[in-house]
Length: 330
Image (cartoon, rainbow, N blue to C red):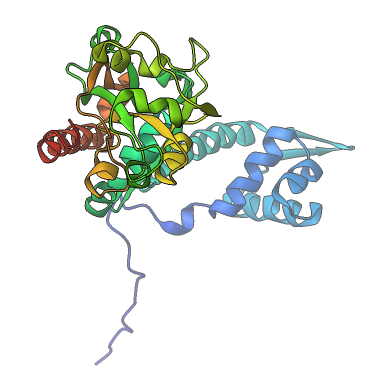
């Protein structure tokens, strides 16, 4: 009995299944795209940090795999063939799509970020001591703080949130509703000044024996911050021994803590310093300054969940601080 040798046939993929070998490698396509765009193996090699001969070999490899010439090699010039132009259009389109998809994927893995601008005094005296409460619950969020007296344009500067210090009337126009808190002012100093045997601070007239710790105010006199308190106390003027001037409110408060004079205290920025005894209010009675701290959000920030969380956290912290404070120094 005769038997025929069994013939084997190579396995074939189902119809419609792309064969990996049918596509040139991505590095070869990148070399082709550069050569087709510049019409020069030399310029393509320089762009790709390869040698001219390496690019030439890669193009030959693509042509051998396709079985067609992609370039006409003329004297010191390259010209795309019809097949080369067809492939160029497809490769450019595919590489652009790949770049766009890569950028979108990379954007989703970037560090989440919230940026905020506010005054140096609010940043150093109120925000920074509390900031760990937010970062502990949002460890993946990068918080950026710009502490400046300049009123920055949120949209133009790319900042999400502003905490503005302004008059109550102006603050209500910001669109943030009620302020984080309104400001009360009164003199503050180190406890040592109260115990000064020679010139104790017991009544406003005693200020004449002490140093005024003032902040340079471009829009008014040195004592402009004291005016609400002076008015409430019914004083004709504020007389003090001498003056030390600062450009930043936080520096004036640091000098007050060090016992170097008397500063005007802005509450609730200084509530913690009053609570722990580093500062005291020598006189009863504070005055509302008709100013406050208001939250403003950039239009872009409404699509940033972390910015919205930060704004809500600011309001919650302000409410908690108000509840804890009561009237610590009034």
